[in-house]
Image (cartoon, rainbow, N blue to C red; front, side, top):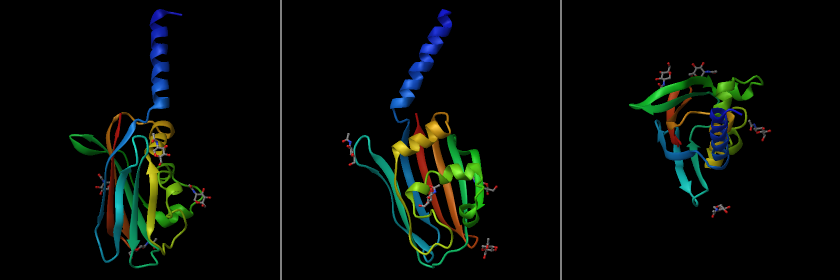
Length: 179
Ligand SMILES: *[C@@H]1O[C@H](CO)[C@@H](O)[C@H](O)[C@H]1NC(C)=O
Ligand SMILES: *[C@@H]1O[C@H](CO)[C@@H](O)[C@H](O)[C@H]1NC(C)=O
Ligand SMILES: *[C@@H]1O[C@H](CO)[C@@H](O)[C@H](O)[C@H]1NC(C)=O
Ligand SMILES: *[C@@H]1O[C@H](CO)[C@@H](O)[C@H](O)[C@H]1NC(C)=O
């Protein structure tokens, strides 16, 4: 084989192995703001580091006016350049329709994939109970952003806004770094 190509192949294989064994994702911050405390509020919203290899985020939101049967969500992916700038995705959708739908929008479904297996939001409307997102680990997020849909390295944020009956009730932002 031509020398230049075998070096390239070597680098490619090495990169592949590095990607296989190291998590490229770090959570840098999680911010939850209730915009209407008569409607809902956060009981907790945090990143936890159990040890060097096990880190996760979790949050719980209490709903004070149940049942909630009208939910709209905006999800915007941001990438830091000079400040955080919109990057690739900014979607707004009717959450009740989305959850019921059998033919789900793939972009929304990708974001939903971060939560669906770790949350009690995974059921059809209405929502009658407090909502919680339980222990979404670095390993899981790493899998989603490295294997499922590979992203270039950088500082990212996922800005989400949660509307009920067309009123913005909560702002949740997850910041992460991809090395
Ligand atoms: C980190 O904590 C998790 C959960 O308690 C445990 O299963 C794992 O073995 C720990 N890893 C190390 C390296 O201590
Ligand atoms: C996403 O798009 C909506 C509608 O165009 C806009 O109002 C909002 O500011 C955008 N979000 C971000 C974070 O840029
Ligand atoms: C939502 O929950 C149901 C029942 O627990 C499960 O069968 C389904 O796979 C979940 N959906 C996703 C996308 O995880
Ligand atoms: C949700 O609530 C808003 C405000 O009451 C209303 O305008 C809108 O039509 C409702 N959406 C659905 C899908 O019922």
